[in-house]
Amino acid sequence: MKFAALPNGTLDGRLVVVSKDLTKAVDATAIAPNLLSAVQNWQEKVADLQALYDLLNADKVDTAFDFDSSVCLAPLPRSPQWLDGSAFINHGKLMEEAFNTKPIPDFDTIPVMYQGASDDFQGPTADILMPSEEDGIDFEGEFGVITGPVPMAATLDEAAQAICLLVQINDWSLRSFGPREMATGFGFIQAKPSSSFAPVAVTPDELGEAWKNGRFNMHLNVTWNGERFGEPHGSEMNFSFPQLIAHAARTRKLSAGCVIGSGTVSNKSRDAGSACIAERRVIEKIDLGEIKTQYMRFGDTVRMQAKFDDGRDGPFGVIAQKVIANK
Image (tube, rainbow, N blue to C red):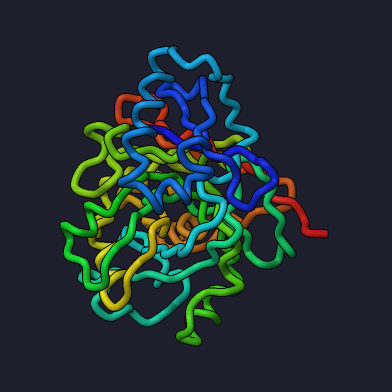
């Protein structure tokens, strides 16, 4: 199934079911008013939502309308919790070098994760307000999952069963704040503005073979100001999403609607490019001896779209955003 949120004057938007080809949608608020409510009552609602999705794809819904992803909110405009990992070890090791930090203990065996703001997720085409160009404005292309309830000390199987939906994310960063905040030992606050989401959340079956071993086996194509930046592949994720979920739930339960991020998609091969500017900068430092790429400026744009290995567009739609000054 595919879902999106359209604005209706509420904080959570209204739930619509989107057709398999992303061309049509139908209001689903008679089943659940919004996606958060649907996820919170997943076992009760999933059959009715599936039936509506099947009817929409069979062109048997009189109330169907053209789907315009440009007006969508984030599928979940707000969530009980946003937990972002650093599951691509290649990226993490590069960032250690970029920020000249001490190696993280057990980095290869225990997932790294921070808890970010979850009350103001941005839609796929929203202009992104930033306070200053001097803050090191950076995009970060990621994949993510939305969970149902997860018990404390969940097993990997329980964690896997808790995955309801898959999403595509741009986890914005302000790099100038990162080194100091990491050094405090208390985690990110100013370095992490609200994250953005592609318009459509999907059930794992929509990826077919591209959802394998708890990972997105597909490319994330990123362009900056219309120029190719990278297309790293999600298969190199060192920790699976069930592992990330179980890690997050080790000492506390997770509420339904929790969003878990993969961290920046990153590949060992330089040919894949990058999904964030900071990674390109540290690669330049390593390979060229100097940093050439600057961070984003007001007016800059970024576009992200997942792609299947055969070149087909992924099911999430497109993130296409502009950075502007917060005045």
